[in-house]
Image: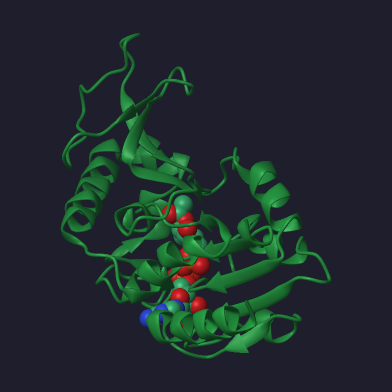
Length: 233
Ligand code: OAD
């Protein structure tokens, strides 16, 4: 047997899916596919207009069904051959799964899951793309997207913190680091870990950190990090 595999932890955001045709949140004037984020991603938005919110996520699901993982996702999946990889993603799409990564923490929930509005522990797979008014849990309550909206708790945050604290190698990719608590994960990584951030438009907060800055798009940047990591093996 070889040496024990190093632990590689990734924090990914919308930017890693950009090359797969899924738009990021903050690259378009704070609009998300034409909507104010609070309209479609907050409990108040849900109360105000459930149909709009359901329809919005139905569209996101349709888009995700036809989206294909890009080289950035694939390199992360391939790195499992050499490292113990955990991916903490803020993305609700399933492109990390589609590319074959096996240990994924969806910090902000998942497009292809629904949950009960009265019993949050009741979570279901969404088959296909549609979730509609009248789709109910086994207790008869309306189902909502299983997404962490603004103002809601992030139930997997402690799991994510433990993973980041234990990382030998930490890679941040495609996130503006503007949304908390997710962004605070960059402060949990050990001093001795190797740390990289990949982003073509480097967030200013990253420039003040001790992350190694790779100012490139997701697939090009991941190829560069992969080469560094494999050379060091
Ligand atoms: P943002 O849209 O805030 O940031 C996307 C980042 O990706 C930016 O820093 C871009 O410069 C970068 N980027 C753009 N194109 C890229 C490419 N080709 N390769 C790599 N990076 C690229 O998205 P997040 O930081 O993920 O929450 O947003 C965090 C959260 O806010 C999301 O999870 C979402 C949103 O509201 C929920 O849906 C609950």
